[in-house]
Length: 274
Image (tube, rainbow, N blue to C red; front, side):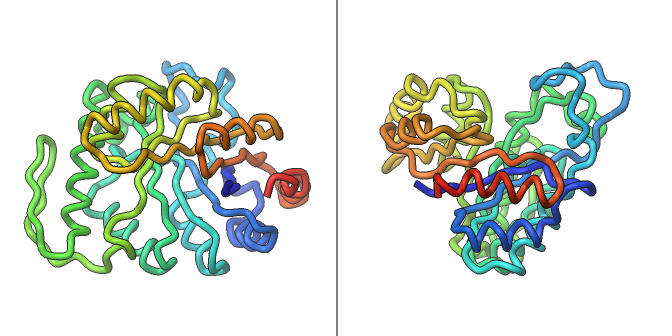
C-alpha cells in the first residue's frame, strides 16, 4: 500500500521543500495539500471540524506554488491537492497551472477536488452555493477540453472556451482526478461520471460505502474499479490492514501543522507503515 501524507502547510510550519525531501528519502509515496484562499473573519458557516476553527485554516500556503517547490527537490514523490476548491478558480488559468505542474513533475500530480464547506469564502469568489457541484463539474469539463490533444471547444452551463492551442499538456493526458466528499448517491454519481475515484476524509464507513461506489461505477459503464484513497487518516496497524482487505492501494496520513522538529518526529512514528 502506498503511504502518502497531507499537512496544512502555512507560514508557520515546516517548508514544502524541506518536507518533500524528507518524505522521499523516507520512502513515503506522496504529499497532498489542502486549499483555502482566505477565511472571512465574520463567518456564519459552522466549521465541520468544530469551533473554534484551527489557526492553520486562515494561513495555508497556495497549494500549487508549494507543490511546485516540492517537485523541484524530488524525483518520485507524488504531488496532489486535497482538495482544490475548483469553483474558486478561473478554470482556464487553473488548467494552465495544473498542466504546468504535471508536465514539470513528470506526471506526478493527482487532482483532488471538492465542493468546500465555507459559504462565506465561496461567496467572496462569486460562487452560488446551491450550484457549486454542477459548477465544479462544468469547470472540470472545460479544463479537460484545454488538455485535449487537439484544439477542442467546450460550451457548458456556466462557462465556455473556444478551441484553443493550450500547452503544456498534462503528462498523461489528464491528471488522476479524485473527488472528495461524504458518501452518497450524488457524489458517487459524479465520481462515476467524470472522476477516477474518491478521496474520503478520515476513512470511516468504507466497508459499506466502497461496494456501493463500485456498483455505481459499474452501472455507469466504467471499466475497472474506482480508486479509493482514505484521506487525513490517523493510522493504526489494524486500520491500514482493513483498507488492504477492501482492496485499497493508497492511504493519506495526517501530519500536524507544525514546525520542522515536530513534523519529522511524526514521520519517524509513521515510518513503521511505509
